Length: 181
Image 1 (cartoon, rainbow, N blue to C red):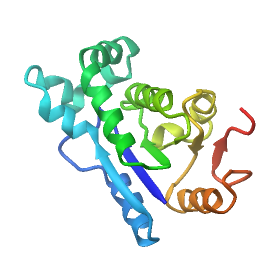
Image 2: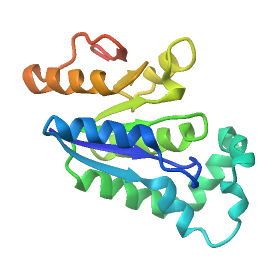
Image 3: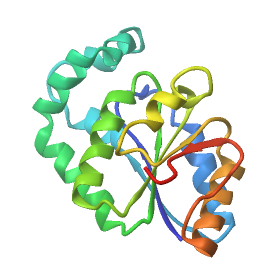
Image 4: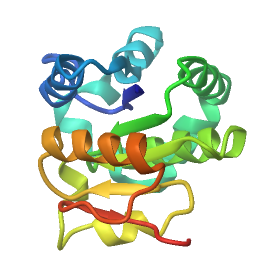
């Protein structure tokens, strides 16, 4: 199966994102076609102006909806180009690694992807998706089909296996999913 994994801004630029690398390696080991989109580093490299927004001490600003809304408006064309690029990967599943600092932009990209192609299965996972925090809230968004509530390596493989065999998810330990809406 074709899968795209996405990291949105803002994640630190000093260290690579290990979680996506581990997920991609595990999926490839099981013969899945995986593309990784590190949109965080691509946006960061493309900004000419204020580099301070990428510093670790400024991470909290990305958790403010008004800051990220302004950022999204400013980068609207770039966001649309990312959506097109992700859709061109022809992935059936598009997984987002979500943290408090990537939440708003991940949600916006997921909305745009679903608007262009409602057949794509959008999976949110990562630290922001753990149970007793935000997992149930995320599952209520129309653009999010599945929320992985713990470690994703085995769970993502089970999701893929069920979709390949039955074309639907009826149960999978470690996720919250929509059933008939």
